[in-house]
Image (cartoon, rainbow, N blue to C red; front, side, top):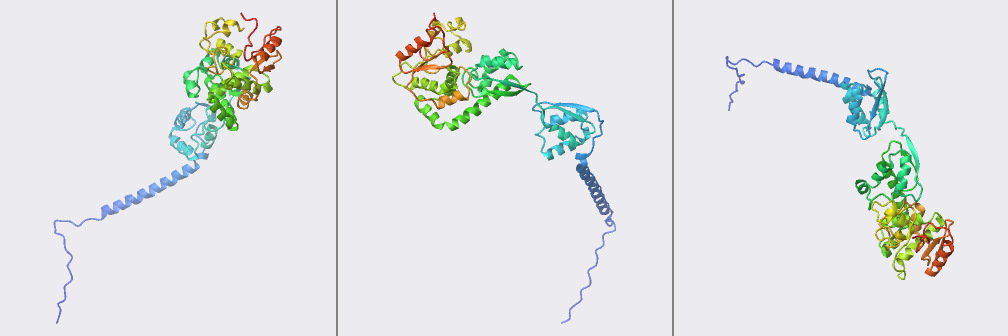
Length: 400
């Protein structure tokens, strides 16, 4: 069988009216792409080199000093705008500086205050100045134990933190009290007595916050070391932190003798716990004085207070701080107690004492019965001197 050889296929020719396609556009496109890549590569190379050299490249400005004040809480974009406006950073390099700072993770480390620059500083030097710790002018202020808000306001006023009335207004500001989670009508009881170094330019609110923070720091440490005592107070008296602060303020005001504080705290707690002791009045003079001086609302009798407790004040039912006419704790702290007073409340000295009276030497005579107490009152108070307050009838014998 013989096969027939196939003729090779002929190349198809385009009709005469269709010209052959030129390859020139492809060559031009390839050339454009090549040139673009070369130019882009050169630009990227130069840009990369510029970025690498940027931190150490001197600025184009003069060596004249430039002062820039960074406000507290200013954002980095705001600070960068200040630097550009002041001529520290050229406007066309703002993006470079921003990327440089973000790369260093320093945007949140810029310090508020006065900064000094020059126009010829390198970005590295500019950033170093921006994050430089500011030297804060400080004022040393000592708040002694046992001072109420009126006295603390006076101390802060003397230290230069504003008029005492303005400071006192801040101490009673409902918005600040809410922020600090403090019950009651003021920060009384939460201004921890200590020696502080406050920024000289601090506001009364900032100073108050600092003292309240110190209170929580000290008190929280005491709570951790007296968990059983806290639980016992909660079970037997239903007390929380607020009641402990109030009781510590009473102990603080009753004696300046630290060794007596646990015993005095024990007397107050005995009065509240012993079923046989009725009515459960603490009968302590400093509470009357506080209600007549530092409380916002004052009774008619308190409006007649002239620094000396009289019979009208002892019998006053309208003074909510009067522990001679009201049972239990007063409605709030009467001073700002120190650590020793809090420890006395959390670790009181156990005894059967229910009364005490001043010996007029900054110590007290303690008694278990009313008969013993009356004899002590006769001995120490009715022989001439008036004491500094006591439980159960330690009023001035000459009160009218």
